[in-house]
Length: 183
Image 1 (cartoon, rainbow, N blue to C red):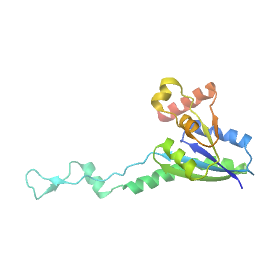
Image 2 (cartoon, rainbow, N blue to C red):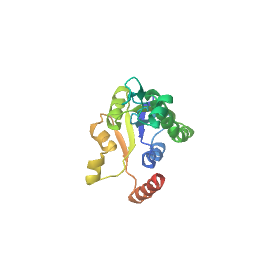
Image 3 (cartoon, rainbow, N blue to C red):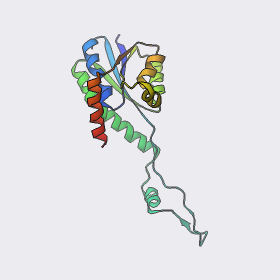
């Protein structure tokens, strides 16, 4: 029976860095891998209800053209969630294919919610044997303000955690890539 290894990914270049270590140190014969992405729950876009016209209360009005567009073309919560889950699954595709090319059995999962709690719950409910995660390497006040999913998992997990902290040089290169991608 293969051991279940959970690899949480957050969509950043940082999170994928753990894959090299997994390929190098773990055997595909003894480990099944689960790639997990936790996304925040999106909201749909629907129109607010119309309000009575100030001139004639029998006539209903919308506040803007935008509200009319939302009335005619609503995006429901379920559609927004399906879209986000599909995008997150697609983004894990290259990592999945790389691991499969190295002989691993790989599954993907996408959950909505707060990453720390969803990962923690997934480990418990799915019988995960080990977690492999990359830390962003934040320290001090930045970590306190931003929070660290990796640190939380390390402190609260009841299973072994393989944690990789990229070198300082690599961290700076990846941060610069992310800054350019968001510019």
